[in-house]
View 1 (cartoon, rainbow, N blue to C red):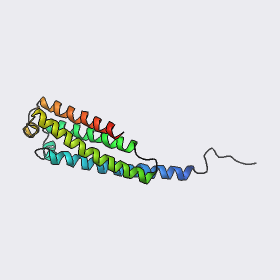
View 2 (cartoon, rainbow, N blue to C red):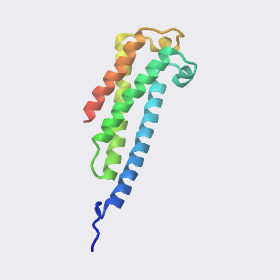
View 3 (tube, helix red, strand yellow):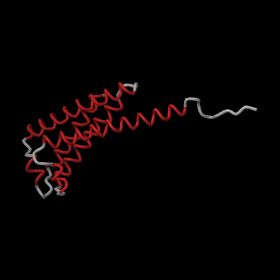
View 4 (cartoon, one colour):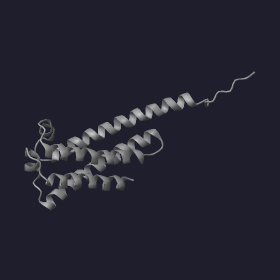
Length: 150
């Protein structure tokens, strides 16, 4: 009497490789999100992390939309990476970094073109409706850059 397993012979190694890929892409994604946050923080007037900790509503909205826009870019960069793990990690990192740079430059250019004073807006203790425009710019440009990666 022979017993047949329902799993393939390579199931265990495939599972371990998949878990490893998830962890490595998670590290790349986290690294890109940190870089994206600091790129937004560095190019935005004021110290965003301090303003967010103080609970200033406009700083929170701008930072949250910036992080979401970076997440769009990172997710699409990872999704469109090569099927080989090493090549995929390299292309994800490369596309993600280029996407972050393009995103930051595009948002700053749009803010300049619209003459929005982001510095005084994010430092205000009162909600400013123009913050929605800045947040929409972050999200829209993040989507555009993300689709550009794909």
